[in-house]
Length: 162
Image (cartoon, rainbow, N blue to C red; front, side, top):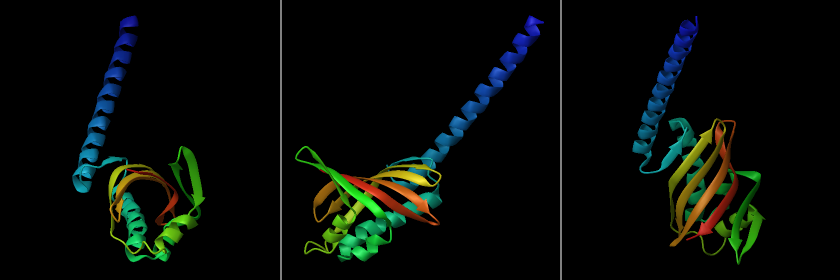
């Protein structure tokens, strides 16, 4: 009887491990497809549709600087979004209006670009990291995002000047 029970548990264990390995293989192949489509960036569980929506929001973030028009970015940030960074060893956290003021200042319009370096998505929330360049100044930017209806919105932006 012990041999039969041991055999059943061994069979279940083998089936479980085989299934788990197949799932890992499947997830890895999906990862390769995403990386192939998006360059060398690292993505975690992001579908092409999610990436398209996230890119749309990030494009608006960048285009607001290129055109010097905060109204472009206002569509992709939540009303109570924040922008934060460290300055002189102190945390600076401001309402998103500070970014809008920058877009509308004399330094904009200016050339700007970005590349996604990481994107972790869980259903309707995402954490996205980008390398960006605003008028020759390079940044590491990180965004907390939520899917609001059919559109992705930025809840918070944190950054580091390189």
